[in-house]
Length: 531
Image 1: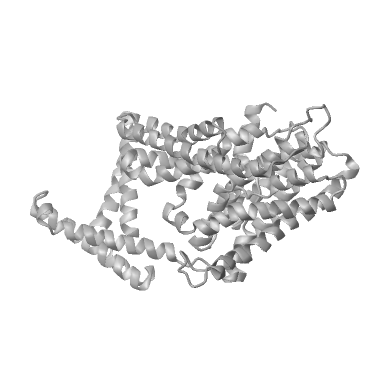
Image 2 (image 1 turned 90 degrees about the horizontal axis):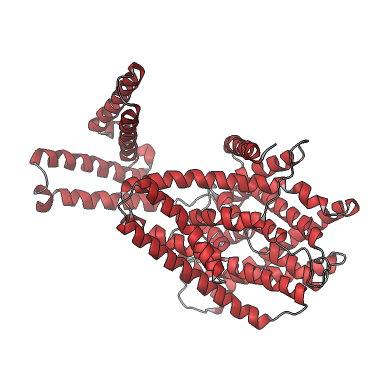
């Protein structure tokens, strides 16, 4: 089977199984990893090798950018303390505990290989965290902390990984140098990300090109930030996150509606396909991971992998509970930026730390040999151990997240929905006030202005009803007759276009343009109904 055929097969499987996962209400990473495992055992399927550079330089930048773009900067800033405690403190604590377990429990694992393994599996995975919590009924605070932690813990994990590998290769470890390098990598990464985003923002503002070219620029942004930061020995991940947070805050001023709509559609599709390929590729690595281990050691290593998984999860739980409350107790009576999490929220934060493709790529990137020609110690066992940790994380934690949320009583708090309704009411109120102002009177004839005032008054009344009693409290009769007629006319026009297409009396390009305009009108009408 050629590479192109294999890629088409994987895309088809990804699309089909994502729909199956949605119907089963199961996180689709779980289904795709299992599908990858099944495909890896298919006779005749060529080995699929996941090159680390493919993960770090092709898949990772756009996926990180999309996740960070969707993250609210204000929410991220409000939860900065728990995010930092998890992204730095929890990673270092897990590193020490997991290394100790690996050293004392795994035969032949000296401190060097033990710390390398711990550095690989200690940081949570940004791609897995974003997908695993998507669509789950969790509060916005929990999702912000989990996703925020996974986006910024790269600096800690990267430095730990680099220095652990260097310690094995050279036999020396410089703790003070590692701490200084952590600060440098973080600063360079954030600085590069902001600079790249600002540069692209200027290009967007000055650009008068098509929406397609503008969308292409948004696709280039994460790659430019990542590659430049890595070239300057900074954190490419933090560069992409900083660029995305900057760009999302300024998108409304940088581009017009047409470009934003097209970019959003492209990014949604790209994110879905890349996420799907990442998880199915994880499963496909099974033959290559197992091949490097002697047959008699495979099942014992699987058992040790489960032990390391328990150590990773246990270390996180041991960190989460004290870190949630100790800073507040030590702070005395000083005002705190946010409320303390409940024990249930802390439990979910502990259980929700997922490992994924980044850990596997880090394991695959280990050098094959030391400078003296000896094989890198325990490299192949580390690959299998990492693979088991990832599977346990995705399959066990991923499948139990939804039941755990229900058991803990942590259904979504509705805060985001309430904030949305409040913002809609505020916006409609201000718009209606403007429509009654002398400035608006100078913009349009009285009959047009009166019609628009009536339209916004209906919208405002409906929003206030919904805010008071929920969507069920709004009778269908409150929908504007004008909106109902608009809907009828849109369907009529679309039918007429179909007749013209069948009669072949009009240029197809013109027909598609008019259909696109009708789609936009219908989308606007749907938003009016929802608001």
